[in-house]
Amino acid sequence: MLRELALPRRSVLRAAGVAAGVAAGVAAVPAIGSAAPAVAAPRMRTTRVPRTRAKRVTGAAARAVRADFPIEYVAVDWSGPRRGAGIRLLQRDGSRGAWTALRPVCAAGADGGAGDPARSVRALVPVGGAAGYELRLPDGATDVRTTAIDTVNGPAVDVSPAARAQPFPGLDVITRAEWGADESLRFKPDGSENSPQTYYPAQTLTVHHTAGANGDTDPAATIRAYYYLHAIVNDWGDIGYHFLIDEAGRVYEGRYTGTDGIPAHDAGGKAVTAFHTAGYNSGNLGIALLGTFEGQGPTAAARQSLTTLLASLSDYHGFDPRAAVTFVNPVNGVEKNVQMISGHRDWLATECPGTVMYGDLPALRTDVAAALS
Image (tube, rainbow, N blue to C red; front, side, top):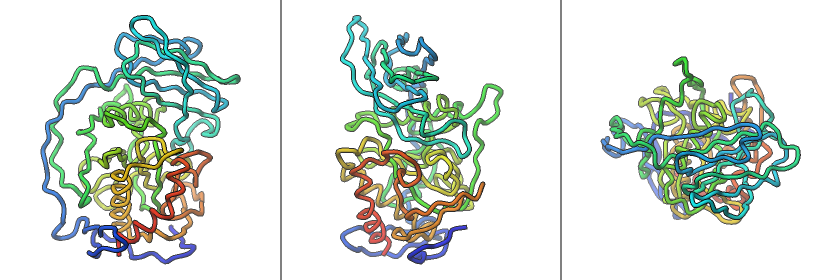
């Protein structure tokens, strides 16, 4: 399915194996899933997780909203111009804050999904426990919807994740249960799964940013907000990324795949289809860095974890991180010429993964290749 344009693949698809050593100052990646796996021992963590609360409003009423719970995030989506939207927060004492611009999150969605990604505009804003908010939208905006989200203060439940060996040496992957994914959000009211998992051989690796706040003090709460935005508001049935990385370098499991195999894959090593590059999802693994990288790059810890994760995935799938390839969507045959490690803007008209992060991709490919040598 994958046709090489430039460099040959470093190795064939394999269940495990990577050479030890250090090149260009980048630590080599140990083996994944080998006969004697160099992975951390399975762990059990009991985590107390607040349940997500939300209030969804559409139409004219969506431009001024109050909730009976502290609002930690506001999701806004509309059709029309991307620029010119703003939000003003309402506090519990009745005061109003200043207007601030809304920064749209990146265009994405399911392959063949409804709506035009170029005209469907979405934003997710941390608002720190506000009582309400008012919106100012650009002329021509239609189909306005807003959602007040609380992923911090709701009723808490104790979660004991199933024991699971850590598949990526050097990275402690935080499971869905540990970051507080409410698995009921994956299901429709009739009990059917909104977006059943499908699996295809992995072909490429795509880097994203979430276009959210930098300096996030509660990244797990932010991920829960993105999960609600993607699964419920966008009606994707799950979070759109395979992995997420916070500023401390912690790696979070994204799209649901159960507990067999490594995260984002089935037991046979195929990648689950997610929703990060509309039209080019199946066989395309998406990794999102929390934050916005238009005027700054990721932290050193996040950048190192991204390098290690990309190297581990490249080794697992036999990818050459410096190769140019033709991606072929196995569902509909749509093709795209890209780098093996690409940025979101290589697939769709979007600023993602930010100007600074996108400019760092050539060096990132070199570092990933060095980690494999």
